[in-house]
Length: 411
Ligand SMILES: *Cc1c(COP(=O)(O)O)cnc(C)c1O
Image 1 (cartoon, rainbow, N blue to C red):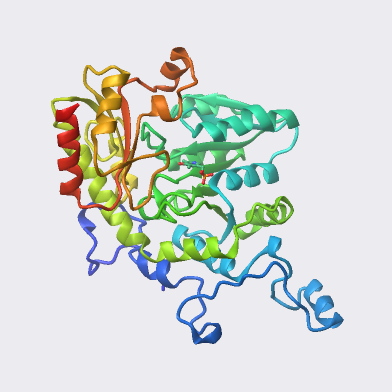
Image 2 (image 1 turned 45 degrees about the horizontal axis):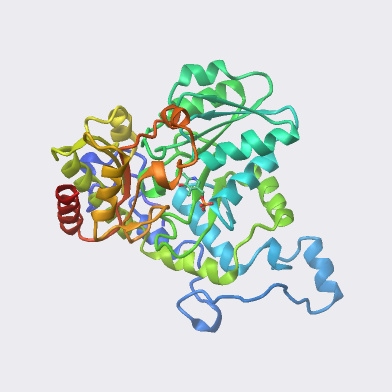
């Protein structure tokens, strides 16, 4: 199933696909991790609604414990459907092993809890998801872990913040909502030179658009709630890394218990079947909508890494296959209310937090996520009153553009 990275006969637009991208994404998304012949001869994986698994006799328990038998034992340690999805996600990401969690945040908590101890330090790029940083600054701190934050994509500042206690460098790429793109090779290189592990939350990019493990990053994390599940109908998270690195992560998950129910795992597996097709449409819609907005007289600025005007366009172009469905923009000369009027005037995108699903979602970060912050905090985070974040779904791009056009004229 693994083919050379660049296949000239591929129908992908090879002209602008950077090196290192597999063109068998759909083959893996549909088949990886699955047995060819399944129980009941079913084409789909059955949902095993089991909290526990039975043993034939005492000897089979002993055989299992002595690792002579590969099998399930108890639901908190694994489920057959979950193992299929984990292998699918590891294959898509180009990693050895994947551990699935009940949400993206559970994945982050699980990874950091298994890797960090008192007096250890982590360094974040400051545009990371606010809950991720909050977990470190408010909670890991209670266990003696020190969090340092440096400006996003300031590699010198990140390197300068490393001390003998530093254990992990953490960033998202692209970041939310500014869509800053990390130079992953440079990021991984800083970690390697200092013997510090690196983590990229690539939720906004997905393995279709970005290859952090190829670039030398140690751990890739996704909120599978977003593009991987893709249908706004489930929560899940995943961490991918080497078998060796993931062993302690998997062991702690068995103790934490942040696991998915079997039905939820099936939804994720089903959502993944169309992963590549959805990403192609998300990429197309994101780019088309960003280009439309950039040329609209009522738009002051568009944040989208696929646009020449984005400060990280060059690194994005060199390292990403596409730029995803998330587009952030500022409405020209608008206060928060006039901006809210644009959000309220759209007819297709639904007003909601989250991103990456088939339905387009729109929100004003000021109201949705930063309402309780002071104006000083918001300006520190780069959240402006006239900012709108749009997650383009897989609707027809012309319909989305026509809808945005009428909303910008009406409001
Ligand atoms: C949504 C999100 C998370 C958290 O994931 P949940 O599944 O909601 O717990 C983490 N990182 C990023 C970049 C996200 O967008």
